[in-house]
Image 1 (cartoon, rainbow, N blue to C red):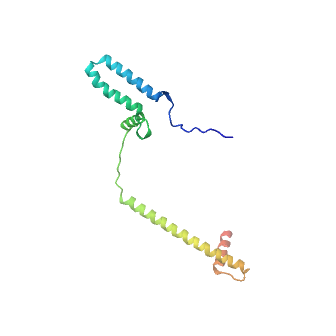
Image 2: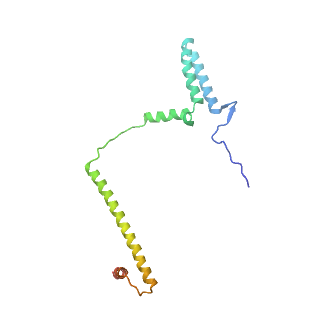
Amino acid sequence: MLFNVPQYIGVEDKVAGPFTAKQLLWMFGMGVVLLVLWGLLETATFYITAVPVAGLFCALAFYKPQGQPLVKFVIWGVYFLFQPKAYVWKRETADKAQKEKSSVKNERKKEKEEEQKKELLVNNIEAFARTLDTEGKERNEKMMEIIKKNREKNKK
C-alpha cells in the first residue's frame, strides 16, 4: 500500500492572502497599540512613536533570523538576562597536573601490558597448534608451563 507523505510540514498555513495566523495576530496587536497611542498622544508625538512601534511589530511578525521567529530570540534573550551566571576559575594545582600525568603513564603501561599479553596468547596458540598437529610428538616448553600453571590454579 502506498501512503502520501506530507512534504512541507515546516511551512505554516496561509490564512488570509500571503499571511499566516501568527502574522495576522501581530498585525492586529500593532493596530490595537497604535489606536491606543493615537488616543493618548498628540499628533506629532504619535507619529514619532508610531514608526518604532510599527517596525517592532512588523519585525516580530515577519523577520526570521536563522529560520526562527524573532519572538524566540527575544524569549531566549530574556532568559539569558535573568538566568544566573557564575564564572568560576580555579587554578590547577601541581598535584592535579601530576595526577593527570601519572594516570596517562598508567594507561600507557596498561596498554603495553595488554599488547604483551596478546603476543603471548598468539605464541601460546601457535605452540598448542603445533603440538596438536604433531599429535603430541613435538612438545613446546611454553605450553608445558602453561598447562602446569592451569593445573595449579585448578587445585587451589
